[in-house]
Length: 430
Image (cartoon, rainbow, N blue to C red; front, side):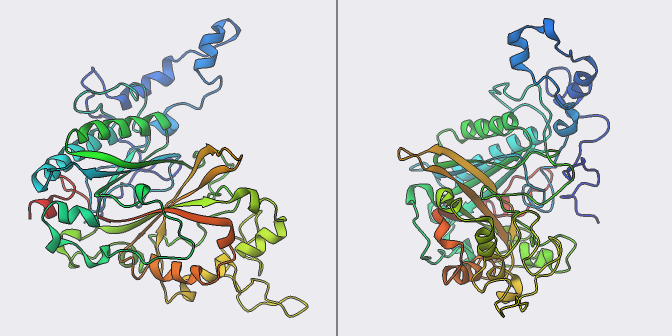
């Protein structure tokens, strides 16, 4: 049976596409997906007579909405959405703590509400109650919503005996400057979409759904390059200007699912087909980084800034030659280069699927940009994925002087919900 979590039809940017016909009802006569089909045919192009107010409200030469708006990811499936899909243009990460007095019963009711809201919004439908109309004119825009449980969730719901050993606290690292108020949490939600209003709409709906059962602990906003912004599909760049994600594991690799997902017969049973996510808010010290020459930056990373190719030669996907030396006998890729240290073959095969967002939270009072990476990585076991790689980076990564880890979280993300089920049902009702 094919994996239903990976739809067969996809939009040009690689995200699952909406069906060619039909569509779930919005309760307003037609779904937002169907509305998009008419918008492209009837929308007006503003000319000089359109008026300044109308011109300011609409892009003058907008790409047809259906190019991004109709992309749809299925909520139900083997794995939760938001893991296997490509990078999304806009994202929100938010952690909640259960309210005082709330326990297993309240958590189950909340996850049931959240799952239904996520299912509806991902299908391009309005929220089940109190919809704000923020996304009324948009399609699903490849919206994904992903849910996870933090270590503290299990004690608060009386489920300690079901807590996975993989949720043991991460070790401390020398680059950590962690803000506890922006770390961890009972519940974690990841929202991603190719449209900022669609993503915000989901964030607002889920926050309202929390009601009296849970309150926001922390929230972070991120972004990536929009699909279609480059002449051809390519690996994303981070705010340092570096191509980032070249060696990400791919589903076609024979051990991909073994590295990323808990097996169906794994422990605990309720985590079958799930994954563990490490979330780190990594501030980039851009003022210091940008003082380096391009050649110095390339030596720190171990790759060319222009195209991501290893300093040992070739193209972005060429295997890095770790033994190659220059005319003076020096290693072309320095021993402390970030790309050398993070290679799986330099870490006992440790690998993780990275799916980050960049972030920018303004400029500090001293004129320093508060910007960097919302690092998100997925693995079947963080003790075999994130931890060994980060330990090695901690011992001598050339990039360390230019970054600071300011927040951290580790969450158990169950497998996808089947039709008629909600995320985490096997844990909360097992």
